[in-house]
Image 1: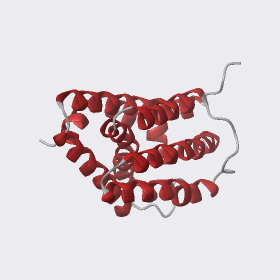
Image 2: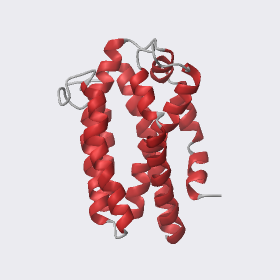
Image 3: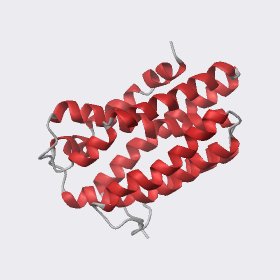
Image 4: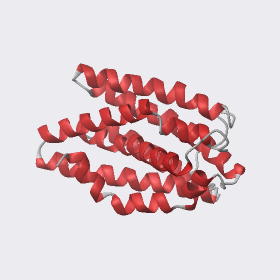
Length: 214
């Protein structure tokens, strides 16, 4: 079994919680309140700027030329392609990071900068994979997106090009895990699961319209 298959199976309780979260179910059936979606998109645009920085750190630290290229393209995708989607819904760059958003991006940046390269890659993977998985499941349930209020969001993450990027990120993770020590693989598992928990927290914070208490 591939390493990424193993850690995906370990993350199943988190994935089930994500799939059943009212934000995700509302996004899928179109019942999610517009103001909740707008708040989510504001947070996601802020998140993506730091996510791009984390991928930039991986590009800097990678020694494989194909890895460097992949992470570099990922930086561009986070800043350009996905933020174009955000600009259609909210003012990009506006607002303040919520506590959960700040915690998640701080975790990714610290891991990408200070942990072994392999561990940083494993921390980055959940955002790719979980979004692709959610997009595919919502598309399968919705069918025609032409009249869906959040069809552009679902369509982006269910796009075959995004699935290809996710597959490439998995392949890099699998290669690094195979070559790494037992200790490195343990840490890769830990950060994958932790970042997956942060993914749930990000959805939940958007649903609750989380703000700083003081």
